[in-house]
Image (cartoon, rainbow, N blue to C red):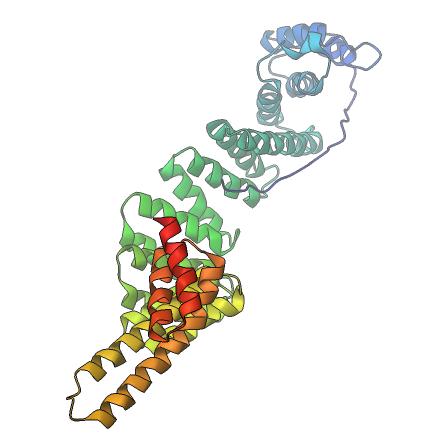
Length: 386
């Protein structure tokens, strides 16, 4: 599962005290620690929010935001279920206050409060994501985006845009995910992996052409971070069994990530596909160099040398009986290749003793070179696995 950017924010709770002899002030007083009567504070501020004399006053909505934010923060079980989403109500109350605050009397207070609730929505979105509540997580991050783009703040939270993309992607909301991923890319946030996520959605939608274009964009934009993008493009070609088209991308990817054993495997396969066994052996030996205990690297080198030995042996068999010298020279070449394959197959066998191809190859090698003790051992293993 994709990893989101986390934010752990703690914002100090403060407030401005302005006297007013009505339910607004009553609500404010009731949320003070010495009273902590949040149920009564909620009742008072809700009544003030619908009263004709106080519903048009920005202070009413600022205080309402404070009350509901207290409800969001409370650990007291008797107040926890007074509203299903007090954080959302607090945010909506501060929005209402901003709209009514024509004289900007509350502007600095509201800047602080918007920053505060934004941090909480960010943290909530992160928690929802970890709980796999992806649609809810998306809504939380979209709220952060909305807050950050308010004229009163006007500072886009690019981390929230990126996280919104990830949440939409995990929720299967491809159109929305693409929208946020492209915004993230345009803000130069998230690096090369953003282009990979975009291309993955395009591939799911069977648009390989668009995905290839996206990968090329990512490679051009992040040339020093593009190894993963090259690998993704290579995989597209491998799925199509098109090793020749993958070849150039493999070389470029190896320039970025020379310690990637999987790339050397593909590179070796591509050289084999092009008919250059020597280059293929070099690539497979790189696999062994990177991971000395890897079965596949030893097997592939042994396989190539063995096949070369077989080809030389076939050439020898085609030589007329009258040409004894030529025959012996050809057999010597075949033996050389077979002997080159032997230590690689033996190492492969030590790493994986139940591989049928390795067992058959070693049986033929030991028989050819009259190594009766090893032939007996390998035959016993073959019989054991039958």
